[in-house]
Length: 587
Image 1 (cartoon, rainbow, N blue to C red):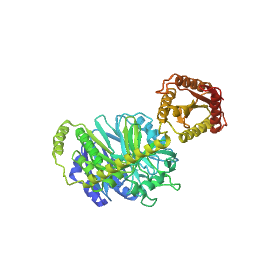
Image 2 (spheres, rainbow, N blue to C red):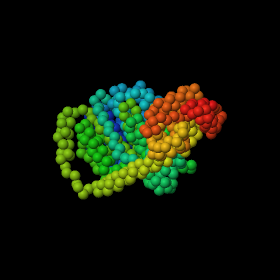
Image 3 (cartoon, rainbow, N blue to C red):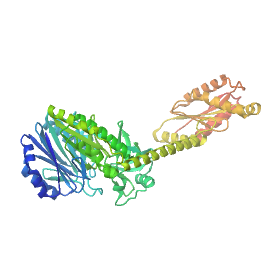
Image 4 (cartoon, helix red, strand yellow):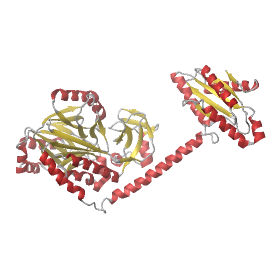
């Protein structure tokens, strides 16, 4: 297996570069040739001219490619150029497919493609895939593609442009699609492929919940228009620079025990946001920000893993927002790969990577792919050569940008955590009775309203117990308010022994408590109330020694207002008081 990566600006230059003795020698023992074109020019006429030259020189080659948000060759960023990545396999065969997406049939087309591949291809070592995430639901396509459990790696990237999502293109064999998928199947029992991913983005904002989704459009987050989140926290406007401004601030989420990033690409008329990677209702999201130091450190881990693998060729599919964030330091994460093997790739609008049995569309990620057709002598030589990389000293004056931003990010992270802690404490104080540390009346009313709405909508039953401490004024007058307070705290401790995790206990008044019990029939509520009454009667209280309470029980009936249920429980409580106290009465 041999590789050569070319940077071209014109057809004349390409013709000259491919007609060299070096490339002629590489083709001599090749069983197949893979040519990837990564171009800043999303123009089918330009690509066709390039293909004509390449097919003339390599008539049996598989030629695929994509428009980019930046090109990678020799491990470095190139812009406004076209990269030609030539890979000559000695023991690997190739088969390519291209599908246009129509009628929102991504999931079914994904299943159709994997079924076709597995029926027509043998000894599959891996699949390279290119898509157009800005015009199709790539996540749905990959979900359909994942319907067949494959053991081989799947990798690739989403075609992009230079930031304005105006036009993206994938192509294979003179077919040019702005909405579709191209796939190259690598078939060999000698080819080894290893893939790695690097993220490096960290949480910046508070946790928020996706509350309304329509396909790829997220309409609401925390019940507010999704775009308003970016407008409020980052002062990002809905203008022609929206995508460029939001690139560095993806939404982060945890899914399947893996951290993902999702970059919004457009704002809808209703202030919704387009997330090509897809978000789901109910998912918890956080605005993220890339920490340059962590990004570079994660890349170093990938360098080491790839070095240990000793590939003969490396492909990189890196999200465009990494390029925007790292700016002049972007080569710090890609250039070291070139010290291991010839490296090429492009900056994407989404990265494709298979982990376990699931193939995912990633964002804000670097996917590195190493390939080799096993050669023991070459492997030993690579081990010897690449060992020198670790001995090189880092420039202590380099990457100042990374260090400054990292410090700033740590500051923001700590301040955000402090504010979140203060907010939680404020909410706790607003909802909680200071003395007994159970809910207060305001919060209890809110919960009761929600329980009632659920019963009205879905059916069901709930019961309420109102408890009042008997002759509590005498306790305060005889022993003082401090002792009275301790009596109330001890009574709450007793009640809690009979409270389920779904029940709600609140201080309703001075010495009065409310226990709301969802999904509880009247008879069961009476049993619980009686147990509480007996437990309090048997409890020895400090100084007071003996204390009793009266309880009223009422249950929700369909069509009733929660105030009616509370009133009936209150009437039952007063009936218990009038009839001698230390009683449970139910209405």
